[in-house]
Image 1 (cartoon, rainbow, N blue to C red):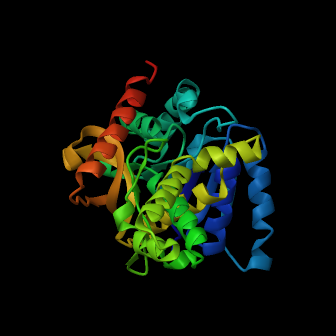
Image 2: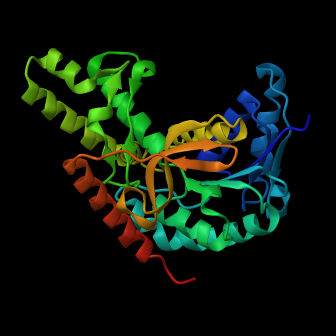
Length: 319
């Protein structure tokens, strides 16, 4: 039985980490594309030689030709300039938009039936641009942000409470930036609300809410925290793992409910913009957008985040 083909556009840290994780899980045959001569070929050759040791058997191809993504079931776009200290995601708009023009044209021509997942920053603008340029149905073009942001929120909660990250459930919605919206009332440890556990830990509800506010703020700035520590790049392992969860949900038709940057057509009161909300991911891509009632505070924060997404999308250069 033929394995599905996974095309990774961008052979940098995220792309090469995704190739490694996809190989270890044998999710499908992998094509790693990059414009730098010999870079993807060298990375996939190195990875392939780990196969006998790690016991995976898939076809790994490195290429400088976009036509080699032909027939891909899923395309993941990581291409673009990463953030560096002092930069916001918004600072990358013009440079990465120009890269997206070439990438989207290649996807449209060579992988017209693929599901596309965009990771390039600024995420909300780049996935919007990708969908516009490919002309693909919106359910087949999405952005990865909420899975990563939710994982960061869950990690910080687990550290604060001294519990396993496996038992923490958390969800972050909105744009992939400083205005993202962690949904505090949904955060739980095996069903027990995190705020209840924080109140028990500190013996004071007010202090518990202060700590939660700090956890929310750290989540909103988590990407920048990594950038500042690395100094020469941005996060790559956690984004790669998060994107791969989405890839696996699509390829295996898992019907997973995940926070996904998708095109809203009236849901949550938003019309015509890509924003992070809960979605069911399966073989068809975004198969369902799952709405729920926001509290007044959550609604205010969410629409503030949407307003920032709109500014970002409106700032896209005319290409």
